[in-house]
Length: 243
Image 1 (spheres, rainbow, N blue to C red):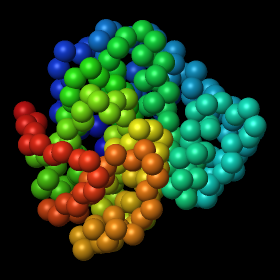
Image 2: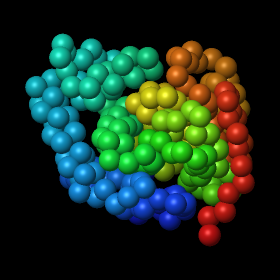
Image 3: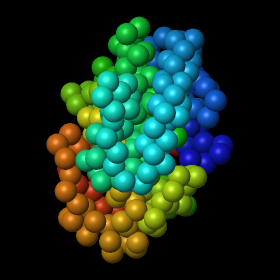
């Protein structure tokens, strides 16, 4: 995402303590019911080392644009990436940010009962109350105006966004934002990438939604192109304020 991560200025996690954890290239914004900076750093560092070790042993897993099978007895974070990529039909690295957010989030839930982990626009959410995730879509006029309501009844959940106009990730499409809500953060991450890759103009938003086969576990999708928006699934939007 944007190097200054401006969307973090809009993150209001009422009732939670927020802090940032950086482990090499992994930059996490975390909100939880207590300050778990040390635990979060330990978790992120451990999972990064797991990824680096596996990628070193199986370099194609980290470079392929096509699905790759996880090796027998592969670590859980690798298995999650492989399964998500297979369901979306793309390479495992498409799910790495979401898988990392979920791995750290689940580790922190051993110490608290509420946690939100944001990793470059890919978010793991577990809360006792309803939360709103603001839509950040770059230069789109919809940026900062609407949010997605996430009910506590569906948590833990992943909310992941891919964009052709924001960030450094590879995108073959032109969508300002494709946001996927799913029970697996890795799956939400992979499908956000796939959907964004397929959008080449505002007229394609609904066409893409109608044409893609979605696996079980995807709760809903919101896609934007300029001032156009399309959505599918169990989604409730709300007005938001960014200041």
